[in-house]
Image (cartoon, rainbow, N blue to C red; front, side, top):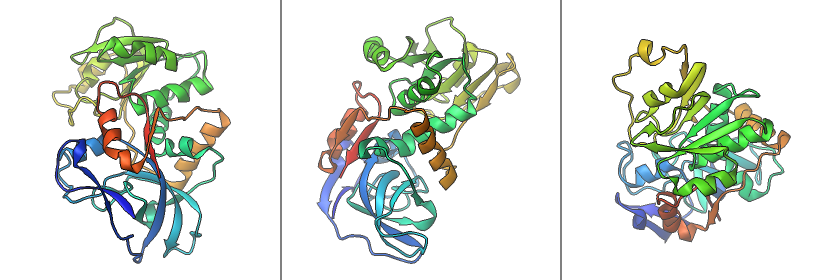
Length: 316
């Protein structure tokens, strides 16, 4: 099989395409033919050597859509279409940047969906994360929402999830550069706010804020949340991992709420709930860019560049 292997930390060029033997089936695991996978910023961090638990060489990839080839689990059938995300895939063991991958049975989720493959492949990590945040933000008709980190895959996914069900809701996006404003407005955002040095350049207040920049800017988000509003922090695009010097009494003084969503909190039912929501509300899940496995270095370069926008996927 072909696989993209990282032997040492570095830039996109360290992703090396090579021929490898297919993984051998072992008890408690299944062999999956990888149909496609989405790219995630956490994989960029790992490639750069910023995931201390990961040792090289490693095949990256924390998600995939695929088909069962062989399995030790009697409930799985050969040819069955599945989704898998997280579970230390691409970190503790080789992940989805390959034509085949070996996965633990307990993180394989058979699915039912009529979505075209490219739209299905865009779902697992990005839309699953956005949908979890959507529910924890308790989005309702009439909410004015800010997506902080609007140009990211999760940011655009949140916009689409909201607008599909509540088309009259106003959804604003923030960006560190207004050069992306025309594209973000074209995607459907009702306005774009400059995020300068982790401070929003506006006096506007919001009912709900999806905080994807993370600990670097979450305290500033609470300066822009209305009374009884909710901030959901489930991204770390700002490059800061931990929230420091946070006084809950003062930061939440507007009777506001802080929540999050961890995409490792996954189950068959939660995956199917997302698929049903996408189907019921006709959510547009088309990716922004599609690459081949041989173009994986180019795909990484695009995702981490200033021109990167939305969900990027690879189809095998």
